[in-house]
Length: 126
Image 1 (cartoon, helix red, strand yellow):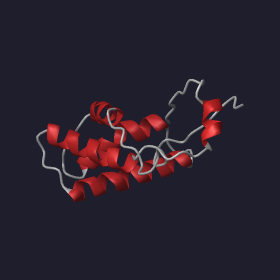
Image 2 (spheres, helix red, strand yellow; image 1 turned 135 degrees about the vertical axis):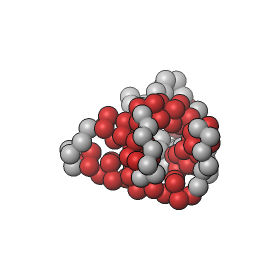
Image 3 (cartoon, rainbow, N blue to C red; image 1 turned 60 degrees about the horizontal axis):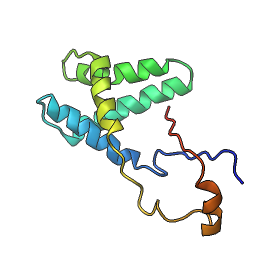
Image 4 (spheres, one colour; image 1 turned 180 degrees about the horizontal axis):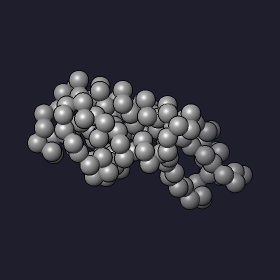
């Protein structure tokens, strides 16, 4: 019997890349701006750089989340409130739940699944 089951969701169970792309496009279009692949690529570069800085303890997670959109739009001469953009993005992201292909294929033998089913599952994200 299992006491705890830990499952990584991002890009193992849930297709985070698809959710990220769709959420970014939605907030850009909701703002009245035109979405471009170049804009999304710039966002990804800034976002990746900020997460690297966090991994090196140079900045906080709040700094990553609340400045990535601000830094992106500064490149285009725009001054935006990064916290507001983050809330809008997070709202869209929270509504996304695309499964990775074949994720519903059983990992455990069917007889083992019976031992897992009575447990409650919680999603935790960083």
